[in-house]
Length: 622
Image (cartoon, rainbow, N blue to C red; front, side, top):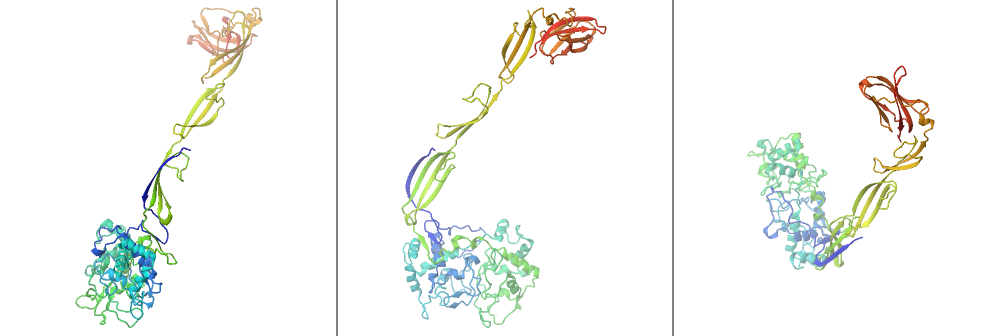
């Protein structure tokens, strides 16, 4: 293994993500969230812009049940993330009973021209609204009346909790807790809750015009959008008149919507309700309602709401009905005469206003453990950052990593602060070469004589392995054996004496080829040398027989116009080859590759048996 590293120690702050923990070194992004460019309404006051630190404190206050007198109720008890910060209960349960109205959804509360909050708009800012439920006798109990503890009691209670000392000091520069500081933090958190990833937003981004069909909508959804946007004189339902796109907030100075009942009191009348939450996220991504609708909670489906606005009868008890719902100058009530198809289309469009992120994003989730505990990690001042440069060879591992790159690992130190190691790892390749070699039998290559694949590993100049793969092929050396007889006074391949001779030639594969020749020299009086079996040689200058010795073929030429039988005889007089030759057509090539080495007689004769030539030849084929 080859490992080189250097390290550098510097001071920094760490990152640690722990369940039920707020890490002041790693805040969620609340202040820089993406907002579509077509969203223009914003009720954020100049003196309370959203900050990551402020919204983080607000998140803790929003989910903390310590803000109720009996430690059972938090803001989140009635405004649940999984229901777009609404409530599925008809009315909400507090420390001293139930509320008189259904809890409003808080999603997109920031994006509205209307600055007032609650159904009856009794809070003139969101900041004032945030502590009013805390000081309500029924809801959270710190009213300071009828025997209830006051808000000062709550402040003293919170000052005794260590994590609030850390959080308030982090946000405001001192651990002091006051109602204005609580209001500012809670309002920042609530305003940060936004939903702009709906099907409507995807279509609006493509078209940038609410009055043309959206390409990502179904025909039914586009029909519903058209009904929503257009006033009744233009064939629409007029919803846009009060709930204005693209924020879908309630228009300022709106009056009662025709619902004047009181939750839990059939005979009750409530004319003060003039506010409404955003129409975004009326339903959740699964299609279910995010709680009953209207302040009474009497409406449990979108169609019930649509039917209400389709036919609003004049109620003499409702002296606060919005003029847009009175049915024009005659004041006979609103009757839109929507068909069922149109109602279904409106409901389909309202479902396109539902997003997804707001229901699961951790930055809006409960930071407390099940037992109500919360850990706040303070700003780190002495965390150690280690920079390591390391070099290893391919196939090795350093600190769990095996590929070149820059890696950052965080280790938890004492006090919750981090030790961060930045590793710059270089992995050097192991060199690998492949050699294909061919040798002849009896030779060697790099010490190897037998065919095969050989792998050898060496250490290169970099210190890493260098692997050589040798693919060795060994070609055989062919050995052939031949026997030949010649007569005394003749030569065969340069030899003229009886004996066994070994000759080496270079074969077609580049390796040696060995021929073993057993040569017998016959005496002159040997019958084979007298060719008595077939007769003596007859010479005729017109005939040319070559080569001699021959090897594989004979060429017989004649400067004549004869047609003869040409035959080859061995020493015992047996005919071993032959062919009819018409010398008028040229020379005869006679194949003799099948003949064994030895002495032969070639004879040319006509059909009468007359011999024209005979010649003694030696076959030297091996």
